[in-house]
Image (cartoon, rainbow, N blue to C red; front, side, top):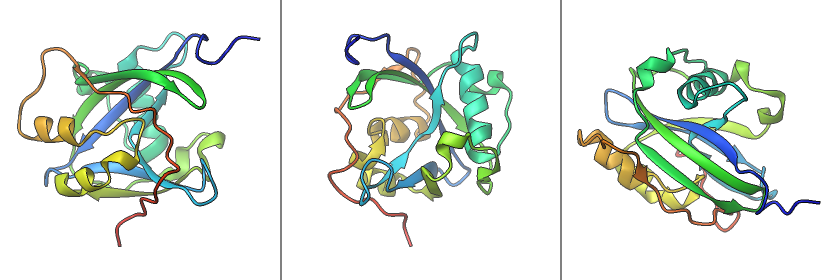
Length: 175
């Protein structure tokens, strides 16, 4: 049996969606890690075999929000993180999408995501900062502030892996 930390990392693509008000779209999960856990999730997931990171990010964006975009609209990656957590090793690349605010539609979720994703919220940069340690897979407030300020990195910003657990505090959806 192969130890999860030694297995090939799960490659993931994520999208930070920012609207015309400079608010960031995050998804919400409740009761997934532990019955009492509540946390936020950046949009995205596993890169399927044969997919580019941008193709996976665009597919995940549609599955998790209902918004369809061309992978080319995502541009170059703006962030990256990698590390080991309780389910194994992950390697995540982040893209930025500027989009007009839209209503999230969970109608296209994969079977494994139904029940895991329980809501969504457009959060101001201050609100993102307030819940930053409750965002899966890593805090993104500093990167979001940089991107909203117009500072697009030439190379993806390395986001520190924090050994995410998601079960130490509750991060409910804002009222």
